[in-house]
Amino acid sequence: MASAKTSSVQTLMTKAQQALSRNHWFEAERLAAKALDMARGEGDFHLMARIVLPLLEARRQRMQIALDSKKVVILESPLPADMELKPVCYLVQPPLVGADARRLRLLSLEREVPALVLCREPRTQIGLCPIVAIGQVTIRARIDPPKNWDKPTPSWFAEACEQLGDAAIESIDPTAEPARQVDALLERLDAFPDHEKLHQALEETCQVAAKAYAGTTAPPRAASRSRTVAAVDDTADDATDDAVDE
Image (cartoon, rainbow, N blue to C red; front, side, top):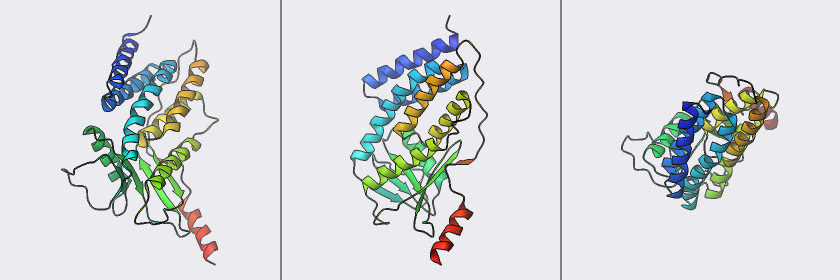
């Protein structure tokens, strides 16, 4: 017999599907994200796998609206509380940091504005462009910069998002037990929810976990702790730069 919490999760899923059918992407995302968190609390990985796909669909729709704008707006000044948000791609850069990008992303969700937000840091000595997302973990990757640093194209922005999400997936320890891999993917989605393959990886890992813990009690969710993943050590990067300069 399903528990009361499981019944509540299924109710949320039904409401999320209804919101999707009405094209209410933000409502669907909120409902599905809440259902996913509750299902993990129940240790129901099979149910989690079912929730991921409608969650992805809701997020995919709002991401596409931002990308279809074909506009990349660079932000480098303090963000006013009454900032007018538009359905575009926002590139946050110094003196603003990853935490500012996260605040902007959360604000866009709160106001139901389909914006995409990415943060970049100063170029490394060898000319790469660090991009970062902050949440329960910090995800960082170093990628090729846009041809014109001051006027990045929408295609570069979209590819940067893809590479950041790919780096997040690659940072998962494949030797960890399934429940821990699920938790690691949830942490990365918290930091960077705008990546299709991250959701697909979560769905697949939930299926693996469901089989692994069938008939047993799954481990509780790991406690969150702030840390950086998918990043090359800065000192190693500097050493490489020096060697190139010589």
